[in-house]
Image (cartoon, rainbow, N blue to C red; front, side, top):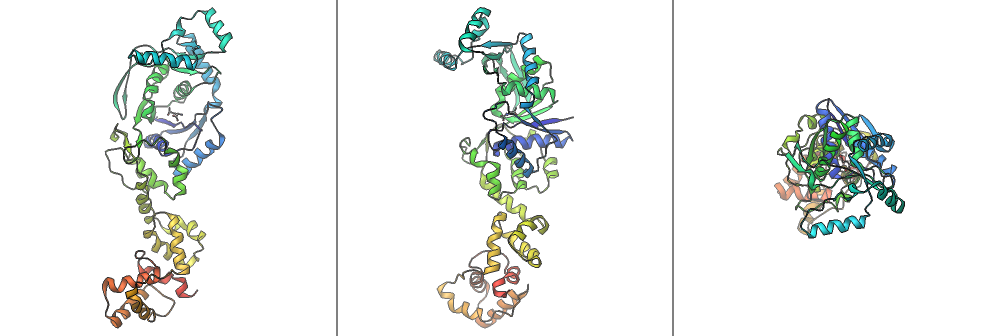
Amino acid sequence: MTTTRFAPSPTGYIHIGNLRTALMNFLIARQSGGEFILRIDDTDPVRSKEEYVEAIKEDLTWLGLHWDRIERQSLRLDRYAEAADKLRDMGRFYEAFETPTELDLKRKKQLNMGKPPVYDRAALSLSDAEKDALRAERGDGVWRFKLDQERIEWKDGILGDISIDAASVSDPVLIRGDGQVLYTLASVVDDTEMGVTNVVRGSDHVTNTATQIQIINALGGNVPEFAHHSLLTGPQGESLSKRLGTLSLRDLRAKGVEPMALLSLMARLGSADPVELQTQMAQLIDGFDISRFGAAPTKFDEADLYPLTAHYLQSLPLEAVRDRVDALGVPADLAEPFWLMARDNITTLEDLGGWWALCRDGAEPLIAPEDEEFVAQAMSMLPAMPFDESSWSTWTGTVKDATGRKGKGLFMPLRKALTGQERGPEMAALMPLLQVVRGR
Ligand code: GLU
């Protein structure tokens, strides 16, 4: 069985970059009838906040990415301590006491000598007495995992064959001096014990994956299949890292982006397949293929979400949006014709308010000076109220006969006079809804 997980740290709102990770893991699990775990990576007690845990759940629920199980790392600290003991017993774990400044200095020296800045393992040669002295002076040290200096290889679901020389990687710190278990160890223990079979995450984790494979092997677990998706950039290829804060899912939701529009884009962006709107989750699941994704950075343009949102809304029956229509105060008998008239002329549901205001209050007429006489004459010919679907054609027919105007010269001034705009819904559908003219 396939088991995947989405493992956010609750230190902020999830954004468009996280969404890609969540969605891919979700789709892989659903494709095979497997399990999708929401794992809250909250081993950092200072930065982790309960409000973000709630926000993550809310955002995933809004998107329809339902999890089968939720796990919290903060409730599993004993499991991590056990794994740490195991690594210690195996001689794969060692305490190191360098201060950040000392480490920095070492790195600078190495770089100056043209060497990669890899931790020199000085702590490995400390005697017990030296360690005791350092501990007394500086407090507990950090615990590093001793990498086997060999090549670490895996077939990545997106990047293909990967081979990393462990000698070019520092022995990772798995436990901090204050005892806090770090992500690398917690993640490995969880992936192993929860039977995670597939891990999709961002390509910023590739080096982590190399070290994690060695830790999993040391602990005797099964190595999952890994896939690393490329990082998202802005439309010009610029880094999104600073802007991700403004691309949080809740901001996009507040701007009226529809979940299926967002999911449709993110399930295809960066793949060889075209982006197309999917209106059902089942279609997204069936159409997803991770092997179609490429390693190159993926350009994301928020603007692409709006045509997809508009397209999605056009597909909806009134039932799907009834709450929103009711909230505008549209009378029940007008809800259906109002929605059918408006849905082709909105980008997001926020735009409905403008069309309803037009129907209810009318608009400030837009009349070009040269059309003033013509519009005044036409207005005097408006058919009797209430209007119906044929009112527009009856009216324009009468005006045409009386004035000799036709085509755009006939229709456009009348549309602008009634709606105050050059573009908008079919006038035949709009006229029966014009409350002001109808005098309700
Ligand atoms: N909490 C980690 C992160 O958000 C999880 C990475 C992973 O998927 O292993 O980067």
